[in-house]
Every structure is written in C-alpha cells, then in structure tokens.
Image (tube, rainbow, N blue to C red; front, side, top):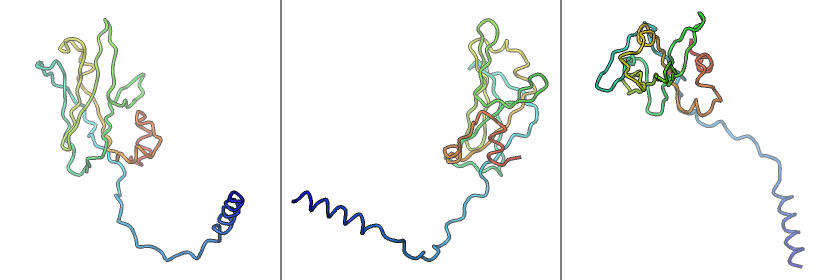
Length: 170
C-alpha cells in the first residue's frame, strides 16, 4: 500500500508541477559597461638586432609596451616572430625551436612585465658562434588577449592570422 501511495504521490506531483510559464517580467536594470577592446597588438615592425649576454650565454632584446596598451593581470601576451620562407611571410608563435647542424638547438622565447617584453635566444652551445641570420633584422609582433577570450574560443593561437581575425585586429 505504501508503494502505491508513493507512486501515486510522485505521479501527482509530476503532473501538477508542470504548468504554463507566467507573464514575462519587467526588463532588469542595465549591466555595467564592458570593455571596448577585446585584444590589442603592438610591435612597430622595425628590424631589431639582438644583444649578446656572455654571463648567461643568451641573446636578448627588450620591447617597451606602449602606454596606450592596457594590460590586465589576467591577460595573456602572445609573441610572434616573422620568418620568410620561399618569399612567403609567416608569423611563428614563440617559443619556437630551431634544430641546427651538429645537434645544436636554439630557441626563441619571451617573458614580460606590464612595461616590457623581453625576447630571448637560448641554445645548447656557445651562442657567440650563432649565425647573424638569427640575430639581425628580426621582426616581432605581440598580441594582448584577455584570458577569458582564449578560454571561450576554440582558436589556434599558433596561427597568427586566426588570432588577428578572431580579435578583429587589423
């Protein structure tokens, strides 16, 4: 008897709890204004040359972040290096490793503060012997992306053009 009563109560509850929606309520108050800029880019596309630091066996170059570029603690900075292959310009996401002859390896990497970005070249050999092709006339571009944007979008951040298009940056 208890089972039948429980089953009857459950069916009655399910049938009576489903009813038509009521009237639509009034419009709520407006929310806080959002940020106009989803992403920003900087890098003046001037050829840069690296400086050797013999104490740490690395090359580096500092880029000042322009004052008009706002970077928040939660933002991500992406760094790209221009490489020309068969007369085609490609932007490669850093870090990027290059495997040279005789087992030598170099890597372009970067770190940043809210004021500057340091691009580094490190390797597994005496970098004073590194070809100037990797050191002179180098071009870099930096993209500031809100972390929420990266989390929400299924975007390949290694594809410079896809990032620029998704952020609607020219």
